[in-house]
Length: 575
Ligand code: ZN
Image 1 (cartoon, protein in one colour):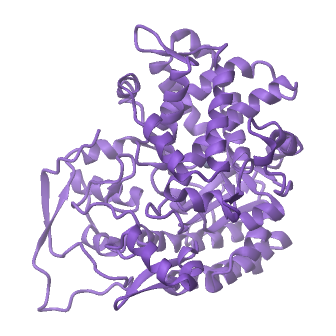
Image 2 (cartoon, rainbow, N blue to C red):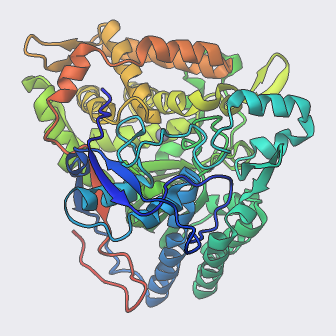
């Protein structure tokens, strides 16, 4: 449902488009100023902004030492450097647009500026990246590639220059034109003006902490900002165990819609909740069993991954860059580097205070509007928390490194720009499959048989609203349609949805099988066909989503507890 009418037009004295790969910001020379150009603003921009409910995310910092608080402040400061960096990763034209809209406040202009900051660019992350500011179409390659570069041109270049393949497909280079050549520029050079100061602050934070695992990670990460070698610090991050938990660096590749190669910078600054974490460590011991239990032939199971896989439950204190763009992250599973995953497993971090905020402010109001009345008592935060946890555990299970036609490769490389969509759907479905398996095994409470499907269904509606252009959104619609087709979900006469309890587990198993086999075979064509067949919203789903109009689509986190740049950090009581 694209909303493309751009009626309200405002005039500003600068052009938006910035050509070439230059990230340096320069004012146009006097006397040679660009003619006044007009930046169109989507007429409904205030309504768009209102879909994000400003929500204070509180964290209990009362148990932190003075030293921990100093470290927290320095890491927050380092993180702030990643915002302007990520703005350039999203689009090379963003710095100019940022200046053109500087100081816009009140009414549509104020909303447009705030929405620009929320989306890190002029494209609506909830509306398939359509522009709400200006009329430049979103470049698939974001700010990572020359804007006019096509996948065909890049493929042709790599066929002719096989020696460039490693640097060009690296997660930490940008591709630029140099005359009629294409060149790969490492992040450390392309983004030096931001990574330099951030690295200094991380070194200062490392010097300020007496926690060895944290100091080790921060020093190695600072070094990686300047060397582009993230492997040692990714390994150190796996061993990080400190009151202040920090995740900072280039991670997710969703922003690269051209190839899915390039990693976006982000930062999560959090404080540990050790008691909550301890409750979950027993699931780690189940990981080899869960891999064996996957509904695919044994030859496709992945028994090589490390089993360390720590789980951390934390409260979020501050986020920056990709972590703050669009929809707020609930949990994450990192690193993405398969070499680290096979050596050390991966670490799941659950953002407890963000999950509770979304459950209360989004999920429950959604369920009240679209689920059958007798499903509502089945909704439970416990089921929600576990589905998020097992979504994250599932990212560490199933095919990762695979063999296609005798060639050793990775699922990520074979499925290219479709990888993220399928991987997120896999994690949703396998999470449900695994919880039901653990209930059968007697490892989890029996009540999840009823609370989990209803809570998962409400979660599908929450995620379906993100739109088909967002990686997770299309995969969510595919799950919904598939389960409806298999009779595991049903629509009542009044348009409300329910779970068909006796069909649900079998359909989840089938869906998990289908998705996992696409990954195991590195089947790009099959993945495209799967998403084409199932990934389009049906009239019933569209009508149900339309009933959710007055429920915020997401929270917009405010961080009252993040230490400021000046003055002592705020100490607050728990919520
Ligand atoms: Zn995920």
